[in-house]
Image: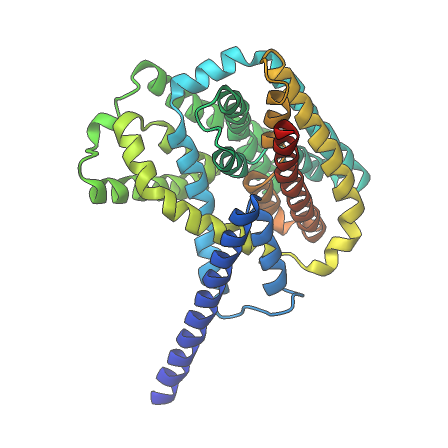
Amino acid sequence: MSSLLLATSMESAIELLEIGGVLLLLGLIAYGAARIGISAVPFFLFAGLIFGKGGIVGLEVSQGFIASAANIGALLLLLLLGLEYSAREIASAVRSRKSVVAIDLLNVLPGIAVGYFMGWGLLGIVAMAGITYISSSGIASQLIRDSGFQRSEIARRTVSVLVVEDLAIAPYLPVLTSMILGLGVVGGLVSLSAALAITGVVLLLGVHNETAVSRLLNAREPNALLLTVFGSALLAAGAASYVGFSGAVAAFLIGLLLTGEVASAVRARLSPLRDFFSALFFLFFGLATDPADIPRVLGPAMVLAIVGVGLKMLVGWWIAKDLADRMSWRRVGAFLSPRGEFSILIAGLMVSTTFAEQLQALTITYVIITAFIGSGLLLFFRSGFNR
C-alpha cells in the first residue's frame, strides 16, 4: 500500500513539474511575442512540436491534463467570441456584407484542390475547405488590439467578416462530424437541419428580445455570474456533442445570448481564463503532431498560405476600398490572413481518419505560416505608413 502511495506521489510530483515548466515556458513565449509585436499562437504551436511525439522532449504524465484543458480552451475561445457580439449585430453584419460573402468563399477553393490532389476523398476535401476558408478570430482580435485599432472602422469591418465566417461554421461543423461518423447523406441532412434550427432559434431570440437572458443574471455578483455562465457553456457543449451538434458552436451561441452589462462583466472575468486555456489548446495541437511529418507537407502548406493570404487581401480590398486611408484595406487583409483555432479544431476532428497525421501536419504548418505572414504584413504596413 505504501509503495502504491509513493508511486502515486512521485507521479503527481512529475505531473506538477511538467505542467509548471510548460506554463512558465508559455508565459516567456507570450512575453517575447508581445515585445516583437507578433501573435504568440505560432510559437505555442512550435512549443507543442518540441514537447510532442517525435519532439526533443516528451511530456508523458501531464498529457491528460493538457488534453482536458485544451478542450476547455476551444470552448472558451468560442464563448468569448459570442460575448463580443449580439444577435442584432450579426444580423446587421450579414445584411450589410452580402457581397463580401461570395468573395470570401473563394478561400474554400485552395482547400478543395489540396484535398483532391492529396487523395483524401470527399471527407478530406470538405475538411480542407473549412480549414482554408475561416480566418482566426482569436489571432485577428489580438492583432487588432496590439495595433490599437479596437474602436476603428477598420476593426468594425474586419469583425463583420469574422462574424459571417463564424456563423457559416455553425452548420458546417455538425455536417463534418456526421461525415466523420459515417452517418451518410440522411444523417448529414438531419445534422444540418438541427444545426440550422438551433442557430436560427438563438438568433431570433436575440434579435427580438436582446436582453431576455441577460435580465436573468446579475452582473453585480461576479463570482456567481462567472460560475453560472462558464458552467452553462460547458453543459451546453457537452449536451450538444452528445447529440452530434458542435460543442464549440454551442458555447458560441451561449455567449451570443448574453448582452450589455452582463456580457461585459463575463468578458472581464473570463478573458484571463480564455488566454490561459487557449494557450494550452494550441500547445496540445502541436503535441499531437509529429515534426517528422511536416517536411512532407511543407510545399503544399506554403502554396496554400501564399494563395490564402492573397485571397484574404482581396477580401480586405473589397470590404474597405471606399475608405480614404490607402492602408485600410491592406490592414483588414492582414488581420484576416492568419488561420488558427477553427482550422486546428477542424483538423482535430479528423483524428480517426487514415490521413489524420498528414492533415494535422499540413494544418499546423499552414497556421504557423499564415500567422507569421499576417503579423509581418502589419509591421510592414505600419512602417510604410510612417515613412
